[in-house]
Length: 308
Image 1: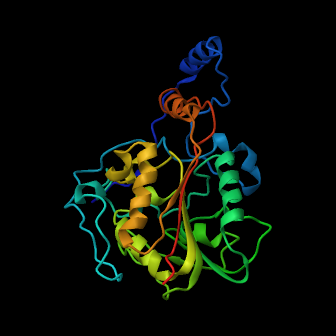
Image 2 (image 1 turned 45 degrees about the vertical axis):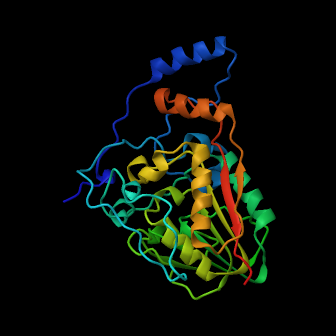
């Protein structure tokens, strides 16, 4: 039997006195403090986007080991010619919580997984990157109740693929959706070359067989189609792979670029890194003191399907 984290109450330490002392020290150092609330999970309404900094719901879930990990996963061959090239070791595919992801995500998390600044940056990127129009079809992978697509654009069809049916059903941009655990079935339930664009936000860190998944992305996206993987430094630690957690934030961008390269089906990936030293300091102050000094860093890796 596995004990799933949502059945337990996160242990929250009272850091109010520490926060006050730290804020005084930071003030003397000339560093402004923008937010004081601990980043604990909290449901939010879609009209509360400007206040996301205090309601984002990752990073502070307790890091606990749910029993010893099982046998390391091995790369599953994909439908791509010759199969994808391995990027990470089998041991790096493991997680602290080895229970099936379907258990962890079996109830809806109607919260944001990054702050408002991150979401605005991602929406602006989508405006510049994604084709639009009645003949365009997009896929939002590992999706939830919000996709961050620009509201002033239209598409012929937007499909969603995720783990929680209720979250997907509340996403206003999706025309159709499928429920699938890509760690259990690392393939996409779509026809060849049917999408003009594929997006995946704040979820790449959970893929245990990323090479197989990226190879199948190459299968379903049209030649010349665009694929965008975006992420920050937030995560559910117990469900992120060791490959992700053992790398620095900068190294993670190159890891995702290697996922694209492993399929041999994409042009050279382009990396967007909008992090600053302030983001690094803010991450540790939030983790240790419950004080967030600035917004979440933004990273994206974009590649286009090679024309064949």
